[in-house]
Length: 128
Image (tube, rainbow, N blue to C red):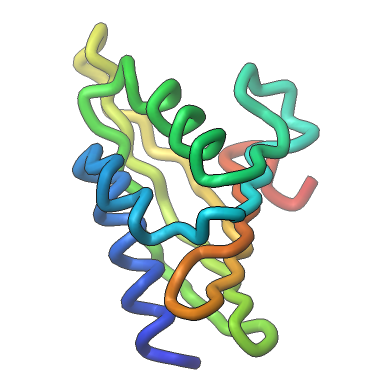
């Protein structure tokens, strides 16, 4: 596994966890494609193409949350430049005191130091 790619993946998680959309954008290829919870029935599920669409998705998702912090527990290279990432998403909505913890899984393709393609499923959508 490329430690550079692993560092890149962890830095993307840090950017999301700190709501740093600017940094998250810098870590993404301009023509990136993101598949978000497809088949889950989630309001935001779908395929987002290009940096602008992906950033708009993450801004909408993060909007109501005090924090949404992904913590990878496994990063495994499944083919050159393609990684399976599993972990827990720690979230706290602004309207409640409860902390929500959901399992997540991502498949990320990193090219030239930038996320080129990603797919994420969370909670009961994993394995579906």
